[in-house]
Image 1 (tube, rainbow, N blue to C red):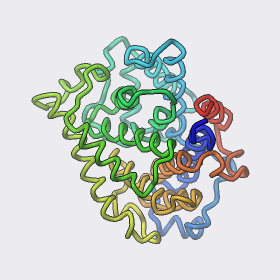
Image 2: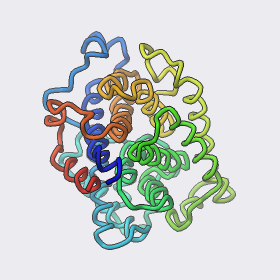
Image 3: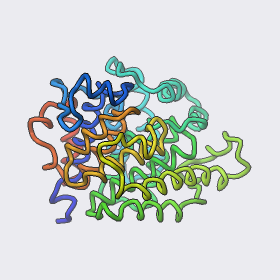
Length: 338
């Protein structure tokens, strides 16, 4: 039995993501001063009674369902994955539960995906919003995938809506971080591993998974297109690396690595909140939720990282039992922890 299955990393990551999302829902769009004024000291933030989540968790589950359908049909491949994930995103778009202030890019792209056009023609290649990497965690938790499958699937699910190269790279890096933590990576070396991964993949455009997506941009070539994304992610990882050991935990993490509305900043600020408290998962979630930026997405990512690292026992039962969509989250966790 591997360490990942012993600690139930998939269950921990998925529940952590949803808990962070729920904790950050009431604090999104509010500055830190008002959060503290309304909800009390950040280290004491309480999970809302109903544990209601946002579109972050809804779309994470949509992606998870798409992966499950694709893998039920055989080895994970672009052709097997694109159709089911596209269908799940369109179903989410039409769902009456899609009433949690979803991102504009997701809504525009999903409306276009609800047609017979190529998915590359629906993709919003100018958008690098965090809506792509807030939902990518499942592919980092699926056992038995190659690095190429994991990276390709992470970028493809992003490209269906957010086709900007930085959204693709940030989704790939987010999935990579979840995967490494689930497999027992030491958090203190995580940023270095991610920087090395980004450098290794900086000029690699995966035509098998992305097709001719790059031609919808103004870039002169596919390598030029994808390098733009990796370079923006490398820049924010360098900022994170410079502050991860010296950042003041009492200061809003957005001050160091950005407000999280865009993909690379959501990755870095979610990681920073986790790395400030790698063995205190609730403190990491609370710090992430008490931020001036995209608090629910930052906290969802921090929760995914903390849960992948510490496993299902990271979360107190009185929190986990109240989170919305709990049964489906646990079902996917059990599937991928088995």
